Length: 159
Image (cartoon, rainbow, N blue to C red):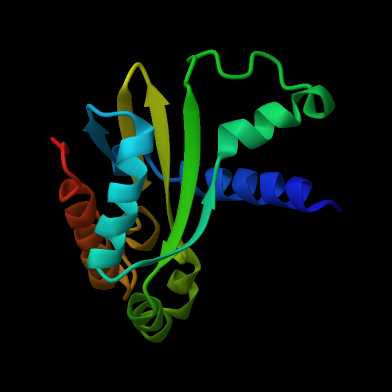
C-alpha cells in the first residue's frame, strides 16, 4: 500500500473515531486570521502546554490530489480553502490514562482539525471526556481537555 493511501486511510480512521463523540463534545475555536498565520501559533501553543505534535497532515490537499482515484462525490461542498489535521501527545497524560483505565489510553494520541475559509480559521478538538465518562479515567480526560482548550485559547486572536 502506498504511503499516501495509508495516510488517507489513517486520517479517515481518526475522523471516524472522532466523529463517534457527541457533537456537544467538540470544542470549537474560531480565529479571524488566515490558516498560514494560525498554524505556527497553534504549534507554539501546544508546545507551551507540554504537547508534542507528532503528525501534521494537509488533509484536503491530499484528498484532492487523489480525487480522480477516490471518486468522492461532492467533495468540499463547504468550499474550505484548507483542512489540516494535527496529531499530538503528552506522554504523562498517556501514562495516567493507561494506569487508571488501560482501555481509555485508546483516546491517545490526541487530535484536532483545522478548517480555513474566508480568512477565518476554525479549530475543532474532539473532547476526550466524551469517550471516558463513567470510567476511572474520567478525571484525567477532564484534565487533558482542560489543558488542550487552554492551549487553544492562548492562540493570538482566539475568542
